[in-house]
Amino acid sequence: MLDYRVKTFLAVYRLGSFTAAARELHISQPAVSQHIRQLEVHYGCPLFTTQTRMVSPTPAGELLFERLSVMANDERRIEEEIGLLAEDGTTSAAHPLRFGCTRTVADYLAPRLLAGHAAHHPDQRILMTCGNTRELLDSIREGALDFALVEGSFDHASFDYETLSTEPFIAVAAPGTLAVPATIHDLLHYPLILREIGSGTREILEANLAARGLAINDFSHRMELASINAIKALVQSGGGVSFMYRIAVEHELERGSLLDVTPADCPISHDFSLVWERGSQYANDYRKLCREWRERALSVHDSGLR
Image (tube, rainbow, N blue to C red; front, side, top):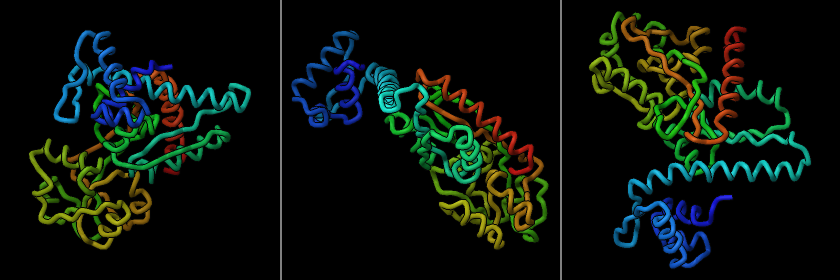
């Protein structure tokens, strides 16, 4: 069980206020101040600086929060496991899968993984949410999620990970709207249909264009849509060209309603990663789960169902 002063520190850090932390913890503000002072004496340095009525963490406070928040989130999971054990009476009770996925993963990969997972673990609850990479990482830090399957970039200093799969990232267009371009520059004459700012798909496209000295503004026209299905429909109607993971357009490519028009000089692939807080004592569990899901994804791919 975490020391009560640790819980006070985490509340002050999260809320940025001694007063707000006291209110949330149902203790007095002087008690909050005392808890923080005791921690500062223990660690031998200030943990917060005061700015008007708010407080900001010092570098030491930032480091301490990063380490202690992992412990707090692990403790929450331990409490849940003990609660399940008390209800079930055995060690067989499975902890719920509480995780998040970015949109492409959620719509096109997660259903295939979870169908197999449910067949092998029929008694385990599955609690999945969707969001962009940044939102999911924040939820992991806050303890709302145990891990996430993401396509975007993340801070490797704060998060550990296991690669689930490496997915081709391709350019697509409707049949007859353009010839397969020889270079990425040949695509710049066409309207670009892309996801909104903050999307992992857009982030990957912008990074790969930048590596080639280009930007999305170099395309003749741009349209932003916050829906993969809406983008696919617009591209199929001849509205322009888009970049997305092949897994998201497999059926359209098979039917011939979309064509792969990826230029030869612009091959792109990107990892889908299972990420969790670095330092978590459940790291081995997450790695094992990722390996199981990776094998399942590969077997589905080899059977021709992907």
